[in-house]
Amino acid sequence: MTKTHARTPVTKAVVPAAGLGTRFLPATKATPKEMLPVVDKPAIQYVVEEAAAAGLSDILMVTGRNKRALEDHFDRAYELEELLTRKGDHDRLRRVQESVQLANMHYVRQGDPKGLGHAVSVAEQHVAGQPFAVLLGDDLIDPRDPLLSRMIEVQQELGGSVVALMEVDPAQIHLYGCAAVKPNGLGEDVFRITDLVEKPDTAEAPSNYAVIGRYILDPAVFDVLRDTAPGRGGEIQLTDALRELATREENAGGPVHGVLFKGRRYDTGDRGDYLRAIVRLACERDDLGPEFRDWLRRFVATEMQG
Ligand code: G1P
Image (tube, rainbow, N blue to C red):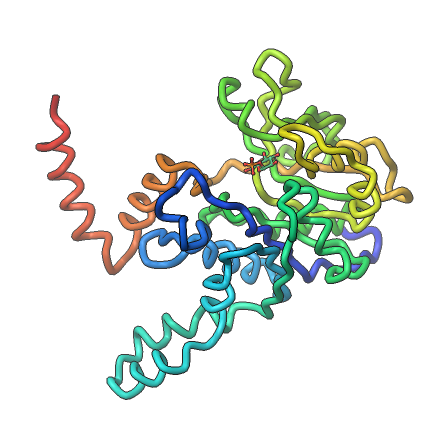
């Protein structure tokens, strides 16, 4: 792709993390759902690592009550670090410090939980008129299948906003934002979005292209969100604001493009997918994988029969 316009670079990411995590109660009664471990790292760390790997070193987390553990996780833990230093446990010390060095973390509270669109709108001051990324904590993208850097590349080339799309079984589309698309001649993985609808019934869905939780947004989204009435579930939906931007040309904050993702994604907000993510990532780890795979093979061969 050749760059035709000098555009404002994307350097900031917004990570909404104010949800209550009711699907994981009682685990999430006193612990934020974003802190649930996927193997031995909290789910949210994978998301921050993904943003950092795409060059986004400024991360704003939109949090709520009961979320202090998130701030602590990305901060120094002096007592622990001192203890590990004294013991000479350099490997664990490195792992404790890793999360602190990933990015410059900032936090803002959402206040009333009025939906994803509302969570994004509280980032307005922080992103200060630049295009920015949004990463939803429930969606874990396998680090070997880069998505965000491709989305940034497309945004820099085409302007406007970019959403990540994945083809899903039509029976599942009611769980997602759904996009109507047309080709825009930029390759097989890039589309122009012509319409968006939040969690449609299968019969009314314009396609089986689901919006997965990665977005590069033009700052015009904030003005649109201010005028966006509560939609599906009585919440202010980001999908509804993007639907409006999809009708506009670039000089008015549009349009919206889609990047089709064909890699591995886990929905850690769903208990079944959460377990699958842990098993897959554990199997692939150099340190745990060989032994765990052996055990899993035996487990499936014996315990899972009949
Ligand atoms: C949110 C968005 C939806 C998107 C989904 C991706 O829904 O509103 O458009 O498809 O994330 O995970 P949620 O899953 O938070 O209900």
